[in-house]
Image (cartoon, rainbow, N blue to C red; front, side):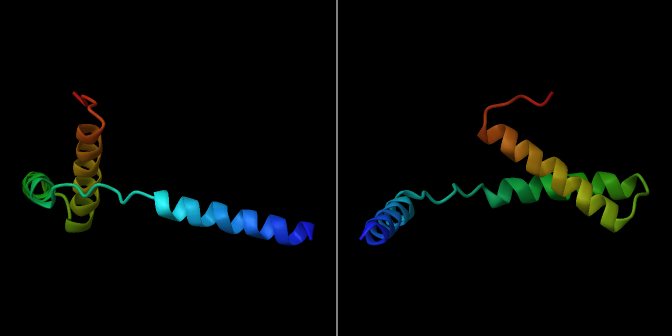
Length: 75
């Protein structure tokens, strides 16, 4: 009997949590693309390779996007 009560309780918690999960707010893809394109052009102009620039710019633009969402000044 106690196992059934615990099982029902766990199922209720899971259903409640599933109903309250909010979808993450999507960032503006155009803003990220502009940042990425500008960064990659500058990075490649400095003589760095494609893979290095892709990783660097993805990281930098992602950090800027997260900072903007959290109202943090990175400068």
